[in-house]
Structure formats: structure tokens, C-alpha cells
Length: 109
Image (tube, rainbow, N blue to C red; front, side, top):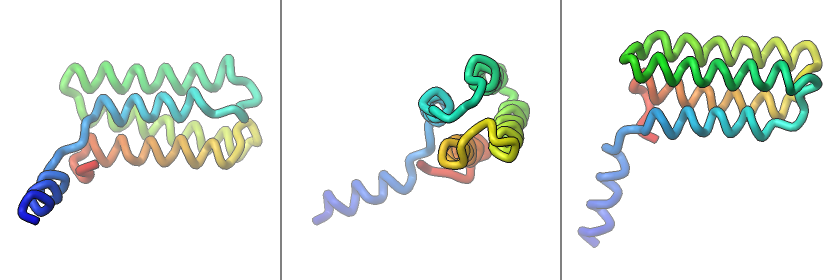
């Protein structure tokens, strides 16, 4: 019984892994199948993830978050224009929100 309590406590105090959340964001973008122009739009979003990763490696967390927010804006515009399906947009936005929460310290996942 004490072992289970210890594991639960460890899970609550574990900080998120920024690299894993950025990888999850890249995966959400890469797995989206409803882009009408994937060569342009999907690649542009993936480049923004790479830019966020570089900013994070430079210790510029606020700039990395800004890049992820740019992804959210772009995804919303693509979905509104019918260039990306809403389900794929929601998946990407969810991954972006998780990455932002991780980077700004509001997530422990």
C-alpha cells in the first residue's frame, strides 16, 4: 500500500518533458491528413516547431512559447479557410496547448 502511495506522489511531482511535448506537437502536425496543401502548410507548421525547439535550446522559453502560439494562430486560420479539417486542427491545437503548458510551467504531464 505504501508503494502505491509513493508512486502516486512521484507522478504528481514529475515535471513535464518539453522535448516530448514538442515531439507530440510535431507528430500531431505530421499525422494530420486533411491539409489541402500539405507541401506548404504542413511543412510551414513543422518549421515553426523546429524554430520553437531552437529557441528552447537557446534558453528563450518565452520565444519558444510565442512560436507555438504562432502555430495555433496558423492552424485556426487554416481551419477557418477550409484548408485543414477541424478534427486535425483540434488535435494540433491540443498538442500545442500541452506544449505551452509544459514550457510555462503550468503542466506536470
